[in-house]
Image 1 (cartoon, rainbow, N blue to C red):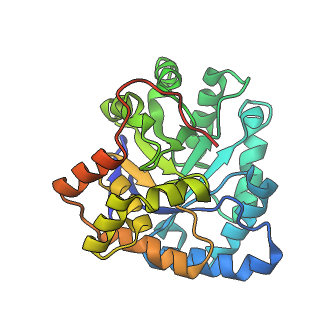
Image 2 (image 1 turned 90 degrees about the horizontal axis):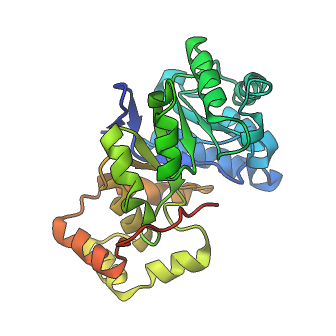
Length: 284
């Protein structure tokens, strides 16, 4: 059964999805990437995250091709708008182009990719208009730290924000100090990008740590599956690992079936502890 996360308006969202950064940019891998996305949907990862920035639209085109064989209402599509396009001058055109590339009539979630020079109040007003027109079901932000979120929620209709997508994984737990608790208090979900670390070297550092390997072996899972299951055990958190091959999709999907016990989580805390003070938000 597909696990869900309830947003603060009652909307339900899968807790494990699929990221599509860099996908669609290499023609020789196109079919493998399409097959991977389709297998992910079939495996319960019906949330797919992309952005107009990814390959300047090539990722959205690939996702649009991959989802053709599925019922739209069975999917949860997320895309993101460039900060310089997030004002009244450009956002309506940006969304229209994203919808055309994805070949869909609406997005389930539209995110401001990061903060730019457009006033937040203008972006919020535009997002609410897009929602009223039925072009998006909900909206949110990405790469917002605690101060940004507080400013957003102080604005008219800022409390309509449903999600903040940020970098979060076992080796990067800074959000747990103040951002995640604040978002939980407001019912705003955290969507974790780079849940398996932001580069290969960092991932190897985590997965080769002796306690991580030992716990993975005891649970009969891979260290990467352990990393994903750690995030899925956190309240009001979903994760969007990128998997551009069917094999990686199969491995990620196993995380939906893993239940970590309190002792397991304590061991992870001891190996990769959360910070005890405020740290800058990690971003890519």
